[in-house]
Every structure is written in C-alpha cells, then in structure tokens.
Length: 421
Ligand code: NIG
Image (cartoon, rainbow, N blue to C red; front, top):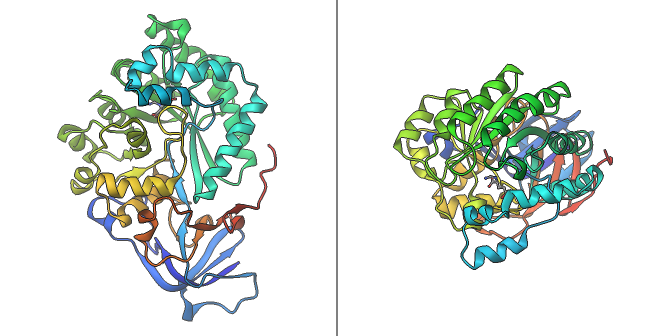
C-alpha cells in the first residue's frame, strides 16, 4: 500500500529511540508533502513526494491530510461488566472517589458485576470498547485485570484479554492487577489477600502465560509499599515485567517502589514532588499520566510541565475504566494534556505514541514512523495544522486507521472485522 501526497507525515524516525525525554519531547520530526510505503504489514519506506515510488500497489491519496503513528494507550481497564453512572451522580453530589469506595461502591461494585457475568459476555463488552478506541486512532493497548480479585475471576478476566489479543487487530499487552482493591471476603485481612495473590493467583497466571506485566495499586486505603514490594518481588521470579499505580491520591511511596523494582512504568503520579522527580531521573521507568481521570474526578492534574522541564519523559494514556475514566479517546487525552497540563501538542503526541509504546515494552515495533516498524498509522481528515488536533477537542479527526498494514477504520467507520476470538 502506498499513501501519497501526505500533507505532513508526523513523528518520523530515521534513528530509532526507545523513548523521548525532556526538551526532546518538544521536537517532533515531520516531513511535509510525503509518501509512506507499507509492505507485508510493515513500514517499508517513507520520504518526500519527489522520492515516491511508482505505484504498483493500492494507492491512498492523502492530499490535505496528515499521517500519524497510531496511539499507544499503555493503561486501561477495558474488561469490565456494565457501567457505574450511578456513582457519577454521587460524584456530582460531592462524594470523593475514596468515599464511594468506602461505601462498597467503586472497584468492589465492578467486582460483583464481573463475578455475575460470563466470560463470553465480558469478551463482547470489551471488544466493543476496543473497537470504539480504534475510531479515535488507537493501535496498541495495555489491558489490566483487577475486577476479579479471586483466582477464578482474575483468570476469567485475563482469558478475555488473551482472546482480545488473538482476535483484535490491535496490539494488546496484558497486566495482572490482583492488587487493585482488597475484596470483600478479605476486609481487615489485607496481608492474607496479598499472600493469596502471590501463592494462589500468580502461579496459574504465569503457567498459562496470561500476563506480560504485574501491577499494584499502591495507595492509602488500598495496598502499602510493603505489599507492593512483596508482589513485585514475586512477579519478577516468574520473569514478568512490573508496573505500579502510584501517587493517585497521595504521596504513597509507589513511585520509589516502582523504580526500585525496575518497573517499566509508574502510572497516575497526581501527587508528585521534587523527591519523586529526582528518583525518576535515575531510572528507566516511564512516568505515565492519565489526565482523563483527573478531569472525571475533578482532581489536580499531575505536574507534567515540571517533569518534562526536569528532563523526564512522560507518556499519556486513557485509563479507560468504569470508575475514574469511562473513555478511551486518546485525542481527548491530548487535549487535556495540552490545556490542563501545559504540554505542547508536539510533547503530547510523543507522549501518546513512542513513550506509550515504551510503557508497554513495544517501542521497538510501535510508536513512530520508522522503517521496519509495524504499519500502525492513522490518516486524519483534512486539518490545517498539528495544533488543530488537540485544539478541536471533540471533532472526530481520524479518518482512516491502518493496523498491521490493513485498513480497519475507513471514513471514521469500522470496516475490518475482529475474528470473534
Ligand atoms: O486507574 N486507581 C485505580 N484504578 C482505576 C480506577 C478503577 C475503578 O474505579 O474502577 C484507575 O483510576
């Protein structure tokens, strides 16, 4: 497939980088009036139009339109049952996320509903969500468990994620998040629940190869630093990568714990000070920011500007989940990052592509326009500038999504088909 007359080819790399940090995040390499050649599902070549090959393959004319690497959304919880809009009403009336959780709502509400839902029904719900994410330009996604909180239901969730991996054209990474909340059966016995995660859940999950990563919600009212360290230690004995939900509601010590255990990412970081920034500067861990949940919970945004100015990389992800961010729209995430966290559009785009790929261990193959990478790209509708993408914050600007070299969304409509798993 040859895409010709591209108004701007965005995020090109001739020299591959695993991630982009600090001042470099503000420099986005682009080619004006470009072509992109895709062969056997990979990016074969690109450059200015005058160097375009003579087409002997299908041609897309992209006059007036830009081509971007597909978004890499490194933090989601899209396998869940039903929705939680009644809590939304509680939020409007002034209850906090923690108060709702203490009343038995929140994560534990989703746990009950997931328990009563079949694997097939869960798969269908999750598939509809990932299909919707594709319409806003997402091409790779990390999906967490964590609404099971028992051996049986965590396995059920992770089998759904495996089915999505097999059936969806998206690249999918799976994360075991048994430490998302203490389940009702273990209230007051948190340490015993951590034992169960380590002794009863991790072994079958590792044996079935159901997880790429293990994550912990290290937060006041959820899991302590000590719990986090025990779980991450166990995860590493199975050769699994690790991640941490850190500093969402307080300065929990989760960032330091993640760095200490070589986490690929620490996520949320709403409460981040100089000490945590200094700690991240010594590490290869990607700070992942989730402004959709700050928007939805009306909470202060993480200090993205201070992090980038200190030389750190940051990634952006949707955190698609029923409680704190019921949306997987990465374009809206870019808009929030720019207007609420003072990131430039160039920084936000790199955070949502190459750095998102890094946070899933995918930056060798995803996240930029680079020869030999998987051909996951989207073509915009006609747009005047790059800045227009976050600026026009509700306009659906993704026209065509190509994944693995195949068109999956055309004219904003899903055309490829998942194979049903
Ligand atoms: O990342 N913080 C923990 N987990 C999710 C929320 C999950 C839920 O409320 O259902 C988050 O925000």
